[in-house]
Length: 263
Ligand code: 48H
Image 1 (cartoon, protein in one colour):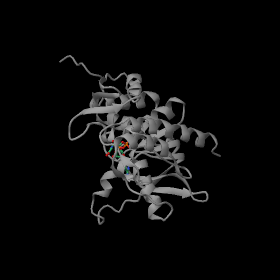
Image 2: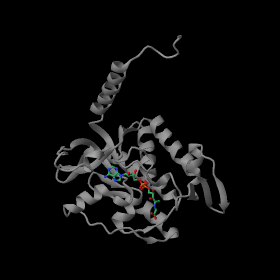
Image 3: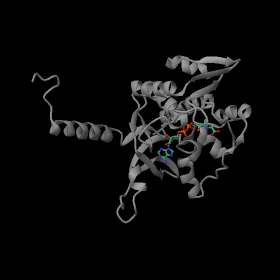
Image 4: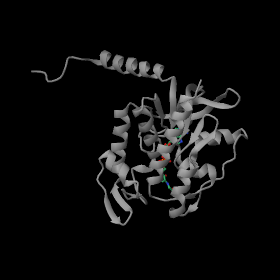
Protein backbone atom coordinates (compact mmCIF):
# COMPACT_ATOMS: atom_id res chain seq x y z
CA UNK A 1 0.00 0.00 0.00
CA UNK A 2 1.34 3.41 -0.92
CA UNK A 3 1.41 5.53 2.25
CA UNK A 4 0.03 9.07 2.38
CA UNK A 5 1.37 10.13 5.77
CA UNK A 6 4.89 10.65 7.14
CA UNK A 7 6.62 7.70 8.79
CA UNK A 8 6.16 8.83 12.43
CA UNK A 9 5.13 6.55 15.28
CA UNK A 10 3.98 6.44 18.90
CA UNK A 11 7.30 7.33 20.51
CA UNK A 12 7.82 10.42 18.37
CA UNK A 13 4.28 11.70 18.90
CA UNK A 14 4.55 11.40 22.70
CA UNK A 15 8.05 12.91 22.68
CA UNK A 16 6.87 15.89 20.61
CA UNK A 17 4.02 16.67 23.00
CA UNK A 18 6.05 16.28 26.20
CA UNK A 19 9.09 18.21 25.02
CA UNK A 20 7.20 21.11 23.41
CA UNK A 21 4.78 21.45 26.34
CA UNK A 22 7.67 21.37 28.84
CA UNK A 23 9.65 23.94 26.87
CA UNK A 24 6.72 26.36 26.87
CA UNK A 25 5.81 25.62 30.48
CA UNK A 26 9.38 26.36 31.62
CA UNK A 27 9.41 29.60 29.64
CA UNK A 28 6.11 30.75 31.17
CA UNK A 29 6.93 30.01 34.81
CA UNK A 30 7.66 33.73 34.77
CA UNK A 31 5.44 35.97 32.62
CA UNK A 32 4.84 39.68 32.25
CA UNK A 33 1.13 39.10 32.72
CA UNK A 34 -0.99 36.16 33.81
CA UNK A 35 -4.67 36.40 32.92
CA UNK A 36 -6.91 34.09 34.91
CA UNK A 37 -9.98 33.28 32.78
CA UNK A 38 -10.22 32.81 29.02
CA UNK A 39 -13.60 34.47 28.42
CA UNK A 40 -14.15 37.53 26.21
CA UNK A 41 -12.58 40.07 28.57
CA UNK A 42 -9.54 37.88 29.23
CA UNK A 43 -8.99 37.13 25.54
CA UNK A 44 -9.21 40.80 24.53
CA UNK A 45 -6.78 41.76 27.30
CA UNK A 46 -4.43 38.99 26.15
CA UNK A 47 -4.55 40.20 22.53
CA UNK A 48 -3.75 43.80 23.53
CA UNK A 49 -0.82 42.74 25.70
CA UNK A 50 0.70 40.09 23.45
CA UNK A 51 0.50 42.18 20.30
CA UNK A 52 2.68 44.79 22.05
CA UNK A 53 5.23 42.14 22.98
CA UNK A 54 4.22 41.45 26.59
CA UNK A 55 4.71 37.81 27.58
CA UNK A 56 1.14 36.77 28.36
CA UNK A 57 -0.27 33.53 29.76
CA UNK A 58 -3.99 32.73 30.08
CA UNK A 59 -5.07 30.21 32.73
CA UNK A 60 -8.43 28.57 32.01
CA UNK A 61 -10.15 26.01 34.21
CA UNK A 62 -12.19 24.49 31.38
CA UNK A 63 -10.79 22.65 28.40
CA UNK A 64 -12.54 25.08 26.05
CA UNK A 65 -11.75 28.79 25.84
CA UNK A 66 -14.37 31.52 25.46
CA UNK A 67 -16.21 31.51 28.79
CA UNK A 68 -19.81 32.68 28.47
CA UNK A 69 -19.36 34.09 24.96
CA UNK A 70 -20.33 30.97 22.95
CA UNK A 71 -23.94 31.67 23.60
CA UNK A 72 -26.01 34.89 23.64
CA UNK A 73 -28.77 34.52 26.17
CA UNK A 74 -31.09 31.66 27.14
CA UNK A 75 -29.21 29.07 25.04
CA UNK A 76 -29.57 31.16 21.86
CA UNK A 77 -26.27 31.68 20.09
CA UNK A 78 -26.79 35.19 18.68
CA UNK A 79 -24.81 37.73 20.64
CA UNK A 80 -25.49 41.45 21.00
CA UNK A 81 -23.20 44.42 21.24
CA UNK A 82 -24.07 48.03 21.94
CA UNK A 83 -22.17 50.66 19.96
CA UNK A 84 -19.23 51.14 19.79
CA UNK A 85 -18.58 47.39 20.44
CA UNK A 86 -19.21 46.59 16.77
CA UNK A 87 -15.92 48.33 15.91
CA UNK A 88 -14.05 45.52 17.66
CA UNK A 89 -16.03 42.91 15.73
CA UNK A 90 -15.08 44.68 12.51
CA UNK A 91 -11.40 44.64 13.54
CA UNK A 92 -11.71 40.89 14.18
CA UNK A 93 -13.46 40.34 10.84
CA UNK A 94 -16.78 39.18 12.33
CA UNK A 95 -19.89 40.20 10.38
CA UNK A 96 -22.62 41.89 12.39
CA UNK A 97 -25.96 43.53 11.70
CA UNK A 98 -27.37 46.74 13.18
CA UNK A 99 -30.89 45.72 14.19
CA UNK A 100 -31.76 48.96 16.01
CA UNK A 101 -29.71 52.18 16.13
CA UNK A 102 -26.66 51.33 18.24
CA UNK A 103 -27.57 47.65 18.73
CA UNK A 104 -25.61 45.05 16.77
CA UNK A 105 -26.12 41.28 16.49
CA UNK A 106 -23.53 38.67 15.49
CA UNK A 107 -23.08 34.91 15.59
CA UNK A 108 -21.56 34.10 18.97
CA UNK A 109 -19.45 31.12 17.74
CA UNK A 110 -18.00 33.34 15.01
CA UNK A 111 -17.09 36.04 17.56
CA UNK A 112 -15.40 33.73 19.99
CA UNK A 113 -13.54 31.62 17.44
CA UNK A 114 -12.07 34.79 15.87
CA UNK A 115 -11.12 36.11 19.32
CA UNK A 116 -9.34 32.86 20.18
CA UNK A 117 -7.57 32.78 16.81
CA UNK A 118 -6.46 36.42 17.15
CA UNK A 119 -5.11 35.74 20.64
CA UNK A 120 -3.09 32.79 19.30
CA UNK A 121 -1.87 34.86 16.32
CA UNK A 122 -0.67 37.60 18.70
CA UNK A 123 1.32 35.09 20.77
CA UNK A 124 -0.85 34.57 23.85
CA UNK A 125 -0.11 31.18 25.46
CA UNK A 126 -2.73 29.09 27.24
CA UNK A 127 -2.93 26.57 30.05
CA UNK A 128 -6.32 24.89 29.86
CA UNK A 129 -7.84 22.58 32.46
CA UNK A 130 -5.82 24.62 34.92
CA UNK A 131 -7.50 26.18 37.90
CA UNK A 132 -6.57 29.04 40.14
CA UNK A 133 -5.95 27.58 43.57
CA UNK A 134 -4.39 30.59 45.28
CA UNK A 135 -2.33 33.73 44.73
CA UNK A 136 1.36 34.41 45.31
CA UNK A 137 1.36 37.28 47.80
CA UNK A 138 4.70 38.84 48.69
CA UNK A 139 6.68 42.04 48.56
CA UNK A 140 4.58 43.68 51.28
CA UNK A 141 1.31 42.18 50.13
CA UNK A 142 1.63 42.55 46.42
CA UNK A 143 0.12 39.87 44.13
CA UNK A 144 3.11 38.38 42.32
CA UNK A 145 1.53 35.46 40.49
CA UNK A 146 -0.86 32.55 40.81
CA UNK A 147 -0.92 29.12 42.38
CA UNK A 148 -2.57 26.58 40.09
CA UNK A 149 -3.55 22.95 39.89
CA UNK A 150 -5.06 20.70 37.24
CA UNK A 151 -8.83 21.18 37.26
CA UNK A 152 -9.55 17.41 37.59
CA UNK A 153 -7.72 17.39 40.94
CA UNK A 154 -10.54 19.49 42.46
CA UNK A 155 -13.16 16.86 41.58
CA UNK A 156 -11.24 13.88 42.95
CA UNK A 157 -11.71 12.59 46.51
CA UNK A 158 -9.11 14.11 48.88
CA UNK A 159 -7.89 10.63 49.85
CA UNK A 160 -6.56 9.94 46.35
CA UNK A 161 -5.88 13.46 45.15
CA UNK A 162 -3.46 14.92 47.64
CA UNK A 163 -1.71 16.84 44.85
CA UNK A 164 -0.04 20.09 45.80
CA UNK A 165 -0.48 23.03 43.43
CA UNK A 166 2.42 24.94 41.86
CA UNK A 167 3.19 28.64 41.48
CA UNK A 168 3.56 30.70 38.30
CA UNK A 169 4.89 34.22 38.70
CA UNK A 170 4.01 37.43 36.87
CA UNK A 171 4.72 41.15 37.04
CA UNK A 172 0.97 41.66 36.98
CA UNK A 173 -2.07 39.37 37.27
CA UNK A 174 -5.51 39.98 35.79
CA UNK A 175 -8.70 38.56 37.29
CA UNK A 176 -10.90 37.76 34.24
CA UNK A 177 -12.86 34.95 35.88
CA UNK A 178 -16.30 36.43 35.27
CA UNK A 179 -18.96 36.29 37.99
CA UNK A 180 -16.69 34.14 40.20
CA UNK A 181 -14.04 36.86 40.64
CA UNK A 182 -11.84 33.96 41.79
CA UNK A 183 -8.62 35.94 42.35
CA UNK A 184 -10.32 38.75 44.23
CA UNK A 185 -12.15 36.16 46.38
CA UNK A 186 -8.77 34.74 47.44
CA UNK A 187 -7.90 38.18 48.82
CA UNK A 188 -11.31 38.41 50.47
CA UNK A 189 -10.74 35.06 52.22
CA UNK A 190 -7.74 36.72 53.89
CA UNK A 191 -9.62 39.88 54.81
CA UNK A 192 -7.61 41.99 52.35
CA UNK A 193 -10.53 43.14 50.21
CA UNK A 194 -14.33 43.10 50.50
CA UNK A 195 -16.42 42.16 47.46
CA UNK A 196 -19.96 43.49 47.09
CA UNK A 197 -21.47 40.92 44.69
CA UNK A 198 -22.98 41.57 41.29
CA UNK A 199 -26.09 43.77 41.27
CA UNK A 200 -29.40 43.25 39.43
CA UNK A 201 -29.75 43.81 35.69
CA UNK A 202 -29.65 47.37 34.41
CA UNK A 203 -28.14 47.36 30.96
CA UNK A 204 -27.90 51.08 30.28
CA UNK A 205 -25.98 51.77 33.50
CA UNK A 206 -24.00 48.56 33.82
CA UNK A 207 -21.60 48.60 30.91
CA UNK A 208 -20.21 52.10 31.51
CA UNK A 209 -19.80 51.28 35.21
CA UNK A 210 -17.88 48.06 34.48
CA UNK A 211 -15.41 49.90 32.26
CA UNK A 212 -15.12 52.77 34.77
CA UNK A 213 -14.37 50.35 37.66
CA UNK A 214 -11.82 48.30 35.69
CA UNK A 215 -8.67 48.93 37.73
CA UNK A 216 -5.89 47.60 39.91
CA UNK A 217 -8.08 46.26 42.72
CA UNK A 218 -5.09 45.33 44.86
CA UNK A 219 -1.37 45.90 44.24
CA UNK A 220 -0.41 43.62 41.34
CA UNK A 221 -4.00 42.48 40.61
CA UNK A 222 -6.25 44.07 37.98
CA UNK A 223 -9.93 43.18 37.77
CA UNK A 224 -11.73 43.15 34.38
CA UNK A 225 -15.03 42.00 32.85
CA UNK A 226 -17.81 40.61 35.02
CA UNK A 227 -15.35 40.09 37.87
CA UNK A 228 -15.44 43.91 38.14
CA UNK A 229 -19.23 43.82 38.70
CA UNK A 230 -18.85 41.14 41.39
CA UNK A 231 -16.04 43.03 43.12
CA UNK A 232 -17.67 46.45 43.18
CA UNK A 233 -21.39 45.58 43.32
CA UNK A 234 -22.23 46.89 39.84
CA UNK A 235 -25.46 46.11 37.98
CA UNK A 236 -25.29 43.26 35.44
CA UNK A 237 -25.87 43.75 31.72
CA UNK A 238 -27.24 40.37 30.71
CA UNK A 239 -26.39 38.98 27.27
CA UNK A 240 -24.62 41.97 25.76
CA UNK A 241 -20.85 42.09 25.53
CA UNK A 242 -19.35 45.48 24.60
CA UNK A 243 -18.24 46.19 28.16
CA UNK A 244 -16.29 42.92 28.22
CA UNK A 245 -14.27 44.15 25.23
CA UNK A 246 -13.67 47.67 26.53
CA UNK A 247 -12.92 46.50 30.05
CA UNK A 248 -10.42 43.98 28.65
CA UNK A 249 -8.73 46.71 26.63
CA UNK A 250 -8.58 49.09 29.60
CA UNK A 251 -7.23 46.33 31.86
CA UNK A 252 -4.49 45.61 29.33
CA UNK A 253 -3.41 49.27 29.27
CA UNK A 254 -3.19 49.32 33.08
CA UNK A 255 -1.23 46.05 32.98
CA UNK A 256 1.25 47.53 30.50
CA UNK A 257 1.85 50.51 32.80
CA UNK A 258 2.41 48.28 35.82
CA UNK A 259 4.71 45.96 33.87
CA UNK A 260 6.79 48.84 32.55
CA UNK A 261 7.33 50.28 36.03
CA UNK A 262 7.98 46.87 37.63
CA UNK A 263 11.38 46.16 39.11
C1 48H B 1 -9.32 29.34 36.02
C2 48H B 1 -11.42 30.24 35.80
C3 48H B 1 -11.60 30.22 37.20
C4 48H B 1 -10.54 29.72 38.00
C5 48H B 1 -13.40 31.02 36.32
O1 48H B 1 -17.49 34.22 32.49
P1 48H B 1 -16.59 34.74 31.44
O2 48H B 1 -17.12 34.77 30.06
O3 48H B 1 -16.08 36.19 31.94
P2 48H B 1 -15.97 37.64 31.23
O4 48H B 1 -15.95 38.60 32.33
O5 48H B 1 -14.85 37.66 30.27
O6 48H B 1 -17.33 37.77 30.42
C6 48H B 1 -18.53 37.75 31.11
C7 48H B 1 -19.67 37.32 30.18
O7 48H B 1 -19.40 36.05 29.63
C8 48H B 1 -20.93 37.30 30.99
O8 48H B 1 -21.09 36.34 31.74
C9 48H B 1 -21.82 38.41 30.99
C10 48H B 1 -21.63 39.57 30.06
N1 48H B 1 -22.80 38.38 31.86
C11 48H B 1 -23.73 39.43 32.13
C12 48H B 1 -24.72 38.98 33.17
O9 48H B 1 -25.62 39.80 33.48
O10 48H B 1 -24.64 37.86 33.70
O11 48H B 1 -15.24 33.91 31.43
C13 48H B 1 -14.57 33.64 32.64
C14 48H B 1 -13.63 32.48 32.41
C15 48H B 1 -14.39 31.17 32.15
O12 48H B 1 -13.88 30.57 30.99
C16 48H B 1 -14.13 30.34 33.39
O13 48H B 1 -14.07 28.96 33.12
C17 48H B 1 -12.80 30.90 33.86
O14 48H B 1 -12.89 32.28 33.60
N2 48H B 1 -12.56 30.73 35.29
N3 48H B 1 -10.30 29.81 35.21
N4 48H B 1 -9.42 29.29 37.37
N5 48H B 1 -10.63 29.67 39.33
N6 48H B 1 -12.83 30.72 37.49
